[in-house]
Image 1 (cartoon, rainbow, N blue to C red):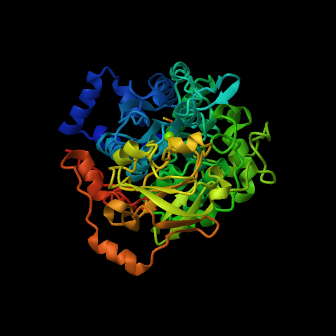
Image 2: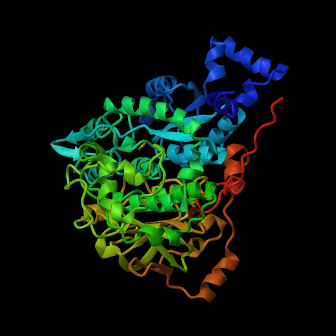
Length: 576
Ligand code: FES
Ligand code: MG
């Protein structure tokens, strides 16, 4: 056998295709049935193109077409592509929350790769939960993979002002509530901010996740910053398709890229981007799949002192298209280089340091050097205290400085319905010192921890010119939003966390510099209330969401399923 024949014989897909038996006869026969020629599948590695395109997923609207570029690259490099559709998670449409289905997509990805004759995969996604879902599955399946990010949508402007998805929706809504934006104007705004296919153009969860994925080496250099509608995007897609074929020959599996050091790089990048709080949960889950433990404390130790360098909404005032023109992620990595582990291996087969050697920061206003950050405040702080024994998070860079040390009376809402019913009531006993508490919005309490944590500011406060107050919940918050919101309180109320015990009028103290979140009650008072507490009734009687609430871990552990987290050698199917 020649060298090439030996490498071909070692491919995983050959277990299906090579043997001279009746099973393999049927496998070959079925490929011929699809019009393929024997020489195509007998001489090439088989590459899955896992595509999260769907007709109801605006962030991925262009991925159907983009898959053709990926396939062109695969064919050109000597692979054989097969496009496999996977659940499309468009953040805004999917209820109760796309987060509930992140683990579903991870399972689907893992099982697609395991059950079929696949040698490696191109993963196509971009909207918030698709990136972690696809990666988690591919890591567990342990096959070479490369990530093709959908890319951010184009910038938009409104009345001369830069407007970005998510961030400005909230601003305009607040203005609409108090009559500063008229009804016809509000309707007209529906056509603004989301100007093209692609992911949110602010530094929300989507761009945070695609950027840290690139930083961990899973995408080609610069891929995550290319706007979805730029001609560079299909070129990147084709290049990724070509590269995966070599990655298969090099046996470049995810766990060679995903190491404790590349996870630390991801954390540093998250901080420097002023990225979404959601990324904490996802990165803990991703690292967990490779058996790399990551606690909230380690997260802060690895990056808690890194200031925000990317001048992007919601922390700064530019959009992803501007970030791309400034040099994109490679330019940011270059500025951040002193804080990175540059020796980490990436999908190119080279190190991170080698990848960014020629990167240039073309606009230091958009991508700041470490010596002049956008804000000194960090993108993430971890809080602990008698209200959050396992931790909670806040994004100081998107919060109001005056509220970072604050004591005020709680106003408690037991559910989203309760909150929606009462929040704008003119009789509501609320002022600028009130601490709004929303509970039962966690992974178990609301089946997937929806993005409810950016509670609306009551209308009467907006009318009085108050735009931010302290808000606390066991939910998450959209990465495009800002405000003094304490999130991911763990353990959550629905499993008996202390948030369940707070009553309206209790004094709550938030002290971000000290990393504390406490209700000013002593342990005896809390214990007395704990004795009276009854778990809320769950209405999840069947199906996936029942599986979800029975097996999901708390936010500080990444919300993965107990039977999926951790590293295990994949079970290869018996072929018969
Ligand atoms: Fe899909 Fe923001 S809604 S990226
Ligand atoms: Mg989002």
